[in-house]
Length: 152
Image 1 (cartoon, rainbow, N blue to C red):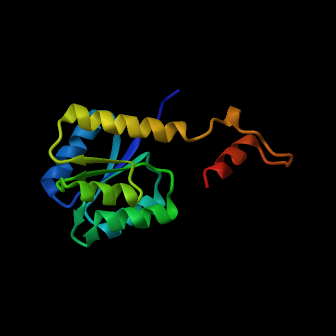
Image 2 (image 1 turned 90 degrees about the horizontal axis):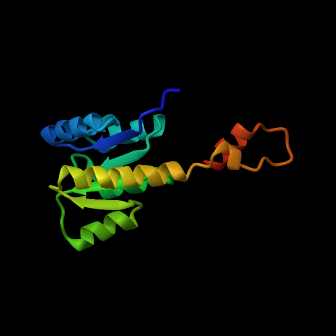
């Protein structure tokens, strides 16, 4: 049985940073999609499944805070990590209050970065009920459909 790689959507407008972080994540066995602006991010986030979103605070077409709020309108489950150069406590609080689960200030060491990512993905995976744990209602729905319905 082949296990699927965890999927990460990394949003960063700076080309070099986006390429470097994407390479680090791929070498750590993650499947990575990237975007450089809010519009592209929303298209990807609405059309594909991800186990984690990583957002920068400043994007060419708006703020990471606004992006986070938009994503939370249609996805309440996928963890969001801010990876930002903004180091003030108020910036961190804004991100967490907009729906993010974690905030790291650039630059951060690769081991710490990967540990936070692993922790967030583990939490996301544990939030999905196993089919064996789902109690099927007294209707003719298969267990897998009942489990899927609980995700939405």
